[in-house]
Image (cartoon, rainbow, N blue to C red):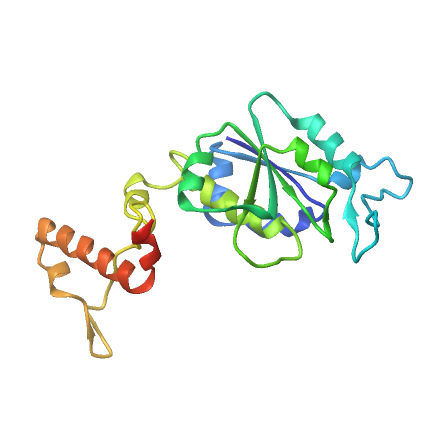
Length: 221
């Protein structure tokens, strides 16, 4: 998979791309992630990428030209262009699974007051990571990329993916490790029984119980 990210702040991605599972996925050749500072595409003498909104109002609005020209330089027939915006569909695990099947994703990170509305004509999809406001699209692009990359075959063990939260619309079951007793809190005896069928049943029951208690909306879905 290929991921391109349009951003005015590429340094924000340094830790994201150089640590843990994402770094390993890149080193294994499972994914390539390229950052594009669309300020580099500005035709303005001072590399300006934003301007005041027509009709007045607060803040600055990102201009069409730098973003369109940047997209023109990287788009292919396989590209899916995604704008990160509060107006978008809320991101879910199901959406991550769908996007993980794509060959080429392009994320556009906004900043300041927002995008010139005409930039939307260059986009195929609009995604939000929640009903709150951030300073820009950089963090959402990292969140979404992380969720997608870990689903690419060979990045994470398949067994781990099969039992994760949201895979079957349920939260994950409780997990424990050594010691068996810590501050009078004991590991459930069924997990020590060696009976794999009973362990499976217990985990399924615990998933359902936890989901009912903490995220009953998932059961409704």
